Length: 261
Image (cartoon, rainbow, N blue to C red; front, side):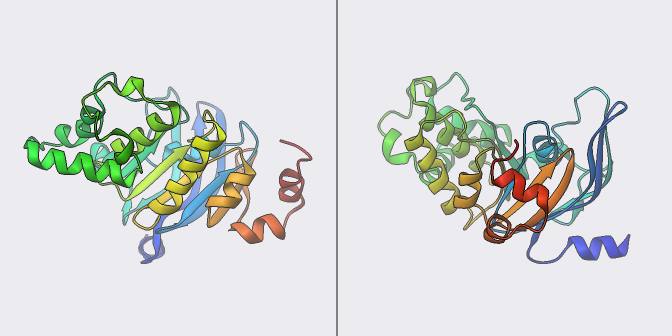
């Protein structure tokens, strides 16, 4: 176990998955996943539908726990902690590892209250402090200038792209270390997608990002490392430029060249 801990606590490593298997009852969804995610980088997970990339993403903040029949084997270390240890504080884990979903899911309340929701849940009540958190989070999410004059208007009135950036601001408001993104731009138009991609590149200066994407072009544009999943396994994991220009395995080359997927 000491060896595992030493490997998992490398200074530049944010997430270290070791020999991870995931089961839903008798069905095995992930097979022996080994993956090391570097701090302050964007790591993309690519692969065809049903390959296991979203399943893996959801193991990183234990969102699979409530799925009937779910079982995980192996180790996942985040911030030096084995997150499937029975003593782990799951609320704190999900604060530290934020999640942005495929479709924006703003709460049916004001823009301000959406961003202030998490800090309030964690005990912050002073209006001055909340005001600062809301402004800072919206600035980080590149949304402040667009909404600063209508903070108390309903978030539902925002465009799709603005809603997705609002959700990102809501995640940032509780000061996570890691942001998980599951197809964050798949429901957006090209202009809104470009803004989300620009935001990801800016956010990695302060956060570690893991993104699931079906768009290989997006992975190539925003990620530092890419993992190619197929049939619940990682076929190849490498620096993005290397994986796309000089893949080591035929399956990877077939996928990125469009022969299947």
